[in-house]
Image (tube, rainbow, N blue to C red):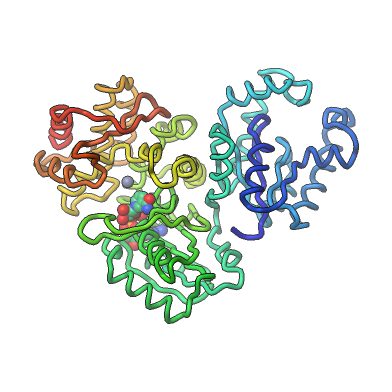
Length: 494
Ligand SMILES: NC(=O)c1ccc[n+]([C@@H]2O[C@H](COP(=O)([O-])OP(=O)(O)OC[C@H]3O[C@@H](n4cnc5c(N)ncnc54)[C@H](O)[C@@H]3O)[C@@H](O)[C@H]2O)c1
Ligand SMILES: [Zn+2]
């Protein structure tokens, strides 16, 4: 994206060097590991430097990081596990870098560190107990300093792509639009409720938002605005708004002059955890999302404080998608969502919720950008959910229909994929705490089944379901017999 270097942070064993080297290749720049750089400059090993005391080491580390970040000659910088303890470093990175937290469960990290020589090469890995304490402490630091979380259990090539495409989730993220534009022309397409939150970076088109903007009429309006402002192939479109606005503006960018760069700046919960990420763009012509293109944004900028003005109903609908993501992700998003309080919860918790949910989507998209396989797991709850949404004819928001679809998919998972019913019940409690219904009473089962038959996700006339074996273990492409599907739909509308 911009000239900011990417700074990788994470615990020992997260794979900062391996992933960082690959990320630097993707970005076409240089990679530098701060620990190795310090060893090179001092001709001493890190364990040896620690014998002079940790403070002295941290001083040296801080100055090397500053030099690398300000020097602008390095595209990707890997930080030692403890470097973020310094306030000055955290501030420098917030202003000048994009910080990516490579996260993996403790067991994975410990196993990697042990396999790599344990305390012999890592002075702080003296015991499992000490390792756990330190991990707990540092994780908070990483999470607060990060622009994005990246799943470090993914294969290094996938993790590197997820790093490259990871969004920035932080207060004031939209301020970075100027950096992205970097002298190019920039057309801002913005959803009306957030129009006054976007810094002035050029001409803008304000859209009313909501599903009705995903139309050919809006496309024409946007194409004409791009022509009027003389946007060329090298220029930029910034879409700021809910999923409807980012979908249509992304598609306008994909098609004008055969494709302009675009930045996605999602402002709803659905947008920040799902719609604004992953490069699917499109409009509704004779069915929902039936015309579109894969056109990944060059950057995703999410400011979680924008969610404060979101109507409660939109928040809840977004939480249904977040619950879906959490079930697919497993640790550590699922425990966070499973223990989420009633409603929005504390504002301070929003960045972590958004970063973790975005991380799952970014990882899945990185491994399967065009939905040839694994990306289908993101459709958990959507087979029946889409049928319900369609049959409800606009009475339910997408997320509200997905809540019903999820409940049905979890029932089917208990019956056909060995899901522990305790998990299903926990998920149902999450829905209740968000004021979401798990059924849509009053709809005709046949109407839902007819709508499901028309859904474009069917293969050779049969429904393919995504089912859950356990949180973090979704399976896709599962064919179920018609009787089982009919029973599930009947229960969903009872
Ligand atoms: N491209 C993808 O991968 C993908 C994934 C999921 C959903 N989607 C699409 O996203 C759309 C749904 O997105 P959505 O749930 O964001 O709904 P939306 O875009 O319809 O927005 C909901 C409402 O919130 C308003 N709004 C936006 N930001 C606000 C803010 N910060 N404060 C107050 N109001 C605000 C909008 O004007 C609108 O009225 C659907 O069209 C769906 O198909 C796309
Ligand atoms: Zn959805």
